[in-house]
Length: 103
Image (tube, rainbow, N blue to C red; front, top):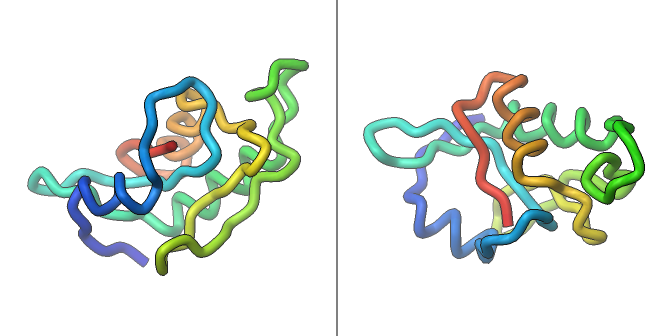
């Protein structure tokens, strides 16, 4: 499912912070300046990150990555903050999204 939502709304839902590790993320496409949530890419990226095993740094595995509802939107969650921003964006793009939003 895809729907358009403005970036401030997404930021509020995810409580965006600037850090290297994140507890949640979605995949998005930008159409006419508006972020468009890409649920299919988000679900696939979350599963890929869950299966990731690239080393001993915290962002190299995500054993707790799972989809969860937050504010009426399905997002990928890692309560133990395993999600690296670059890694999350890589998986979103790998699964067809234009980019990623994480907090």
